[in-house]
Image (cartoon, rainbow, N blue to C red):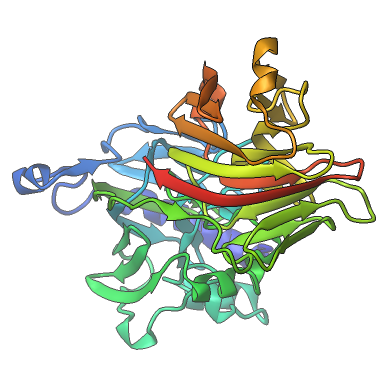
Length: 432
């Protein structure tokens, strides 16, 4: 949002006000014995920025500092800069923090943020609890008006709070917020009042994601774990009492990734053909463009054990990507377990848009592939450890730090060049 001259003057005054008022009142940035016993952790020690760093960085260079027991954003950030993140990732949690904005201030708390050099900003992956001085911003930027999905407390560009539940302290005073993320159940709280709740990854959630601001951000909100992020959006802001209680992950049963009827749960990228036969087989087939094509799960899978069956009806140059993400319109970043004709390393591991082959299979294992018949592939990914099996025989066993740092989708591939046709069935995954 463009800053007016009036905003600049008020922002400067806001910095002074924030600096003078952070340290007053009761002791902050400390846990009670009861909170410690209940599993709460501090994410800010009140003294320095230990545990925080630049988004996509390994140190802290952004214009954030600690004054009188508060993390402060100078207001020097922009849409493309000014983001700091936690050193650690979190999946299910209750997150509490206090915040105070300058007049017209605009900031936010993001979670499940995925870091990768491809993602220039965190909000294309991580949902955001919006922090903004609604009235002050509109005063400073008149005649511009905020959309409802941009206002205080929203799940940014997705879900709106109940207006009757909003209890905001006067501008310049401290407010307290909470995010609950519990295995897909999400709540936003403000000053002790629940202001919104929703379920992530439902049909309604995907409809919102795919029809609004995030329509061209295919990875938005899909991650089940990620770093937390504070935003300097060009306005001074202060934060304190940032604490988190991690919640257990619910155990999941093995599930089928393909329902045998249609492509529910998947999204196709490119112009190549993906369809389901009357006898419940999933088919990938080259189209007239003879380009790359991908069919990717809508969900992310980090640690898992996947089994599937495939049959190569023609040139079988295909593959199974894991911990991958989409670069529109038709590129995939990640790692591929190869599916290819005999002699071309089926069950080996290839890194797209990076190092290329990580592991090719031993020559004597090429005959394990059954040409023109059904083959069973098993892929197990846990942390930085990846194993593959083909028709019950071990093929690859590697440990790779870069893989260990990633998360993402599972995607089936059609290679370019044309003439490819592969059938798939019995895709069953167990999350670890």
